[in-house]
Each structure stands twice: as C-alpha cells, then as structure tokens.
Length: 109
Length: 112
Image (cartoon, rainbow over all chains, first blue to last red; front, side):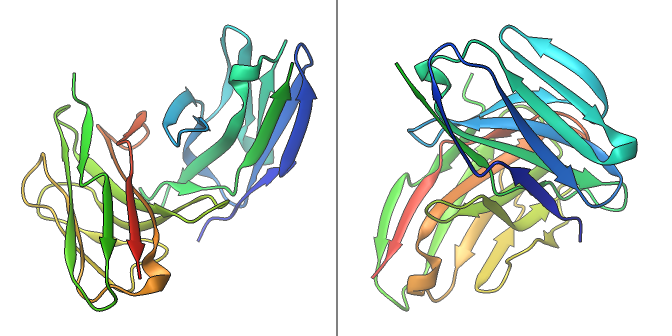
C-alpha cells in the first residue's frame, strides 16, 4: 500500500518563528489532506490539497503531485499552534485514507 | 450541527469482554472510517465503508468487526478485547472520495 512519511518528527519553536513541515508519499494520490490534532486530541482539517497551493491565514500548503510531496507552512507561530500535524493520502486505486506518523510541534512563548 | 458522533467516550474493559463502539454522522456522507491511535503514534485505519452495505479492511483489521447499519451509522465491534486494543478510536466520514474528512471526538478504550 501507499507509504506516507512526515518530517521532522518533532519541532520546537519560539512564538513568532516560521516553520515548514514535509509529507512524502510513495505513489500517485487522489486525495491529500493536512490535519492538526490539538493537545486535547481533537482532529481538525486544515487543507484538502491533492495538488497546487492554498492559503488560510498564517497557514499555507503546497503539494507537488509529480514529485510526491506536500509542504505545510506555518508563519508567525503562536502557542495555540502546538499539537501534532498529520498529512493523510489516498491513492487512485483505493479510497482508504492513510495517515503519516505526524510532526509534533511545540511553540513556546 | 452534530457532525460525527461517537459513543461511548470512555470505556474500561476486562480482557475477553466484548463491546461495540457506535458512530453516527448527520452530513449524508457516503464513506465512513474507523481509525485507532496509540499513544504518540499516528492514526491507523481499521475498517472502511465506501457506502451503505459495503465494508473493507484497512491496515489493522484483526480483532475487529464492523457493520454499516445504514448510511448514517457505522459500528465497530471488539468480540474478545485484548490489552493490545487499548487505544483511542476515531470515527470519520466524508461525502465523496477526495472531499474533506470529518472526525468524531474519539473514544478512549482501556483493556485491563
């Protein structure tokens, strides 16, 4: 099945810093989504982005489908950005959404 | 706007007991999913249902059964719980392949 790898596994930032999270996947995808899991365990969808670039406030994402990776950018990070960021993909041969192992972000004041 | 609702939120089982996790969505979604998340880990797909009456195995189906009762409801059953099934279980749904997926709040299950 499709493999999803995220990097870095852990990221520690001071408030105000920028960061880039990466998601690599092993096959062509029909669907790619980024999620934020807050410290209380809630999963919030950030972007549906199988290709191209999207922006939502301080967050933006870019997927280069031909090179099989996606990037999530967080600018001017805030303590409320802390949590785990997951990307999830499903391939053209399946509708099963498979998650990466996540990037744990801690933002300190 | 309930979205995806899971019950129970917390459960403690003894080894060998059975239980069913319930999930319902009110968004008229076709696809529903069950995932488990172990401490410090990502989500792993247990079972998936593309539409009413169909189910398919995910990455870690052993020890579980599912039932897509109707379009709204997708239940997950543990027939004989084991300590290795201690985890947080998430139900999710999406309207069509490629659409945004919505998650329930999770069910914390401990098997002792």
